[in-house]
Length: 335
Image 1: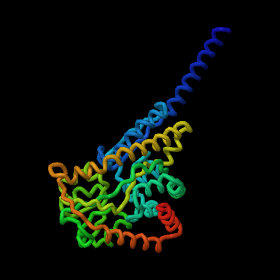
Image 2 (image 1 turned 90 degrees about the vertical axis):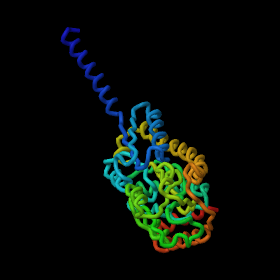
Image 3 (image 1 turned 60 degrees about the vertical axis):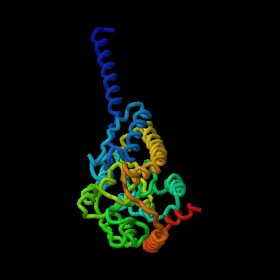
């Protein structure tokens, strides 16, 4: 082989190596995963576990960057951003998905789940899988994990809640979700829809006198410092799915998609197990003198449940066939 032929051969080989290295580098994906709550909230457990597992299962070709505390966007903005592909992944409370996909309100209805076993049977079973597909078909947003299912506990600054009449006229912050607005109206309260970002200030200034959140959020946001009364009302069951944009999922190769799906599933199980074990402990902290120091009282849930069922029945009669069918499947799964 002449010198020129050797040189050309060497250059071709080096070019091939460079192209291979470039292709390998191009396969690496950076994922921005956002959520709106404090880093110590239950969202943090889900996000950090997903980061760990996605990076491990992808062999390091995926790099997850977590953005807590609404660094990317608020929950109200994040779903639309995923549809546009400007946000990769976000954890959003189910009730805040409602403006973009109203069918989810069947899960938001008051007292729609008899207990946590009922909720997990629905969400982790065929009903939950079908719903995730319906969500994707309508919005092109992927629901990767439902995660932990919890209850929204109630707190206020005005008076103890021992019966539904104690809610009368109480100014209650609610998310911008019509089911939740209608429920508190049925309870006799005066609901005031506010985005999450405005809630702490509204509570501190007295613009609202009460609100509800998942048990862990009351502690992580330190609402016990400004709200003296606590009630484990358990009127709404909440979940906060891990969602991904279609733009992100389209960038992943098959192995990376498998890694993301596996990591999301296992991170959801981790969050579920971790948070489920903490709820009783958190409620004890919130209502113990010298710790959360919130006051609680025995209360009668009977009228609340009756009011919740009225809301359920009204929505069943007013919504379309898909909503009625989903509510029917939820109710059937209780047996």
